[in-house]
Image (cartoon, rainbow over all chains, first blue to last red; front, top):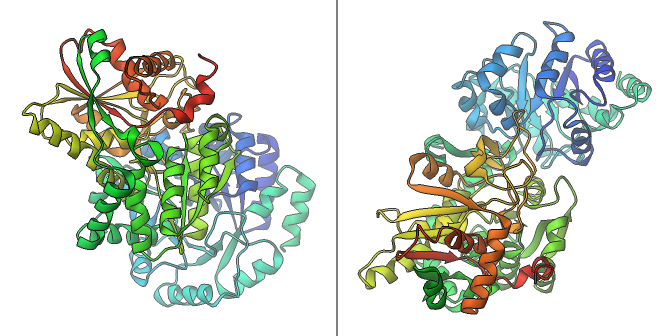
Length: 230
Length: 386
């Protein structure tokens, strides 16, 4: 499972739709970021794209353009707790549940998933595993049968560099694989083809964010980047 | 982990990246052990006494009281080492850092008081210290930037967003996610993810305890207790001494220039429920969930969120939350300076301004006001007003 993260609506709606189509055609899934004013899990590149688009597009409009991409596509959202909470958890869920397969909430730890489910969220929340996660944590999250597990390959925010030769990471993924067949996707720290290949050899896939967002405002460069991953 | 204990009613929680969860569990565990550990408590109390200068006096403000027709008592947190109540918490959390075996501390600061108090404790305990401060705040609270540097801390000026307290906190959280293994993040207010609201409230409860002792010894209770509220640590500190009484508790928020969004920081008065920096509480944000710009003349109150305990006490009606404008705070600042010879911090000046503005309500009443800090740091803002 090879995925790309892009910032929703950036640099403008029309360009975004083109870029999203390219990702859906050439990759296995897309992660659409719904901008939040205080993205504490994001580094300077993604934060700056988010800042650029804030105020120009709202959550409802991002939902609307997601729908233009069609049903049954491998679309995931990535955002922050307050976006969904402020929109109305149930309302948000009702509007998008037929269009996206899951949601990554950067500031929602696994232990608080129920907080959203109990308030009407019917979209699977993608759980996180970090090098610090304990075996009991892994057992807890696989009970929900999420579409995949998001493995955070680094201690840090988006835009940092992962060290995929680190035995700590490799061993942790082995522990997960022993406990479940749910795909493990490495997110955070994947820079280009070399990392991507490595990620596929030790896990079931990857998501590239920062490197894609860097060229998101230039269609040709974006196409070149996606092709470079093939 | 029992999820329920993270919440005050419906407020609180741990809305942070998964990477921080083990550190928050470790912190909670260390804190619960520390406060049962005699050595820890003795060290904490001894530093509060001999290093910070506790207990702080309760002073009857005679000339102010005569002019405004009430009996005003000031809890003198401004007399503490480093000039504000913030040192109570940083001594506690600094000791916890050593207790956990960590060597590096980070903190956010708005007015710089928490930053200075953190840098001070870092020097005292031999810890590496990095302080995140919005660029705008660094400019308007310049003396405190110098103090932090003198104390050996690295001050990182944050140029994102509104360049104030909220953005400093974002940056501190990013640092913590990266360096969580060797770093403790000393949050300065009763905000942030569980267990911070609990821990900060505990270390600040000494304010209320001392105040209550004073009134108990005199066999009376005040009619009102008043404190300013930004994130809410000084207010929570003093209010905790009176939660079991019928004393009326009033938290004063920063009304800024007007009720227009972007011109105030009245989270509890005008905000709605939302999630920022780890907890669900009241929040100033738009319908889309984007955090709103805020303004206050005082950098320490210039924050769009508020601690979850305050949200809980607002809903329950136990504490009343009101506001005054920048100008009322300025009037409070000058009145206390000229009637009592005490220059208050602009944050605390909001509480004083509130007393002046509502002098009819407080006529002949006994009012206890938490003078949370002194105003030396505010000269740059004030010099234009003299």
